[in-house]
Length: 365
Image 1 (cartoon, rainbow, N blue to C red):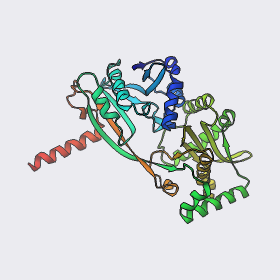
Image 2: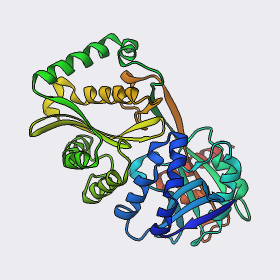
Image 3: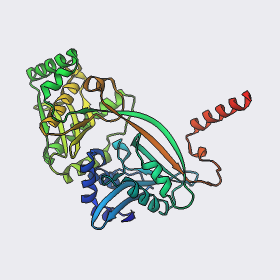
Image 4: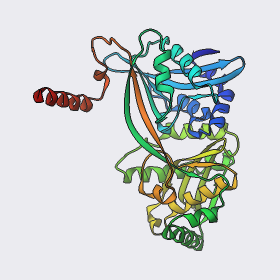
């Protein structure tokens, strides 16, 4: 087994088929290489560098972790998982080989250039063995492991489900509203369309961009901007994907699109990544109706899980009560200079709060 730190995009492309096989086997659509490779090419911040760790066993890829390096104003090198706008890219490994792959990966990462001062591991399942395995495998003194925030990611379990049976398990209000809104949208001339061919998806991406940006503005600018670089990234990913791996669900009529959901797939799992809807039609809830039909489409494809993405937006609770708990972690190199504690790498507000807490403890002694 061999771990390689890949720094060039052309070299990383060579591992894409094996890397994608891991995403498919793990049902992790957001970790598919086509999205991360497109992000590296079009949307990676200026001044950062590719540092992806690929673990191979003979001709087979058994582990993949796509990082990029950020150099802070203080001169520290922080390794972050790409691509942050995907909200859920995870290191992947072959089933049943977690510890050996993670430890091999840690050795390569710890010896990479520039040497990591910290490694951010976000969006991991709360019971993931990866953070502790990284500590065990790290060359030299093991880094300090700081457990970060936890958050939930709702998902719909759809294995063997029938759409009408699934609807009957939802609340009466949700069930009636979805059916009623769909009828009313059809009466207004809107039809649901699931685009799977690259040309059809790319033709509609500007509408996706428009509706997403309108929704982002309503949230006060929260979320990554769907700018030209983001559009180029998604367009490339669509062009390079197998048919059906990136599909766009819309409610549309000639000359008008009022709801969009970009769905990404790997194996038996799909995930709703980018959503948008037109508030002018909010009385008919086109966003909810569109997402419900995305769930139905996944059922018809024989998939097992439909991920709604991290976050606890109220609309998700009407779709499901199932969720995964995710957690972020930070590995920090010991003996940092001129700083003497990993707490120096925490955000300023967190350091201030920690200082106040320590002060209260001392005052109470």
